[in-house]
Length: 121
Image 1 (tube, rainbow, N blue to C red):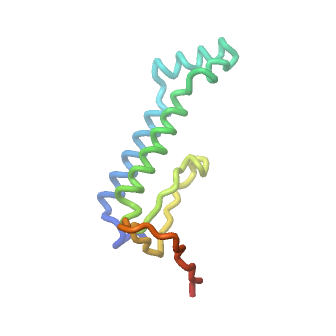
Image 2: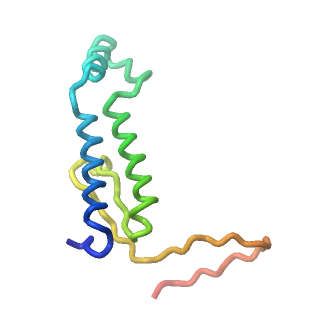
Image 3: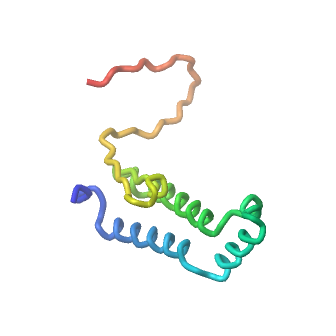
């Protein structure tokens, strides 16, 4: 596994379990989803303009969850997880970041000098 040494297996497993729970909740048949489907059928899907679907709300929650986990856990460990919804829920794309980007330090004095860009070798 290429993630060995980059992140603890328990953290990765917990992340995947949480993500799977969110998608399972979105895919489950509940009173709300049945009502939403019925209302959509009756209104020729015009209700979708006014109220987002249960599935879309769950996808948005999952996207927010992934962004939060990226900020808190993965980016500090030089990893980036792309939202599986962007790939049609087929794969979880993990990017290994190879460059360290230091946090910008607040400056005391204001300067108009733009730092010079240097090419990579």
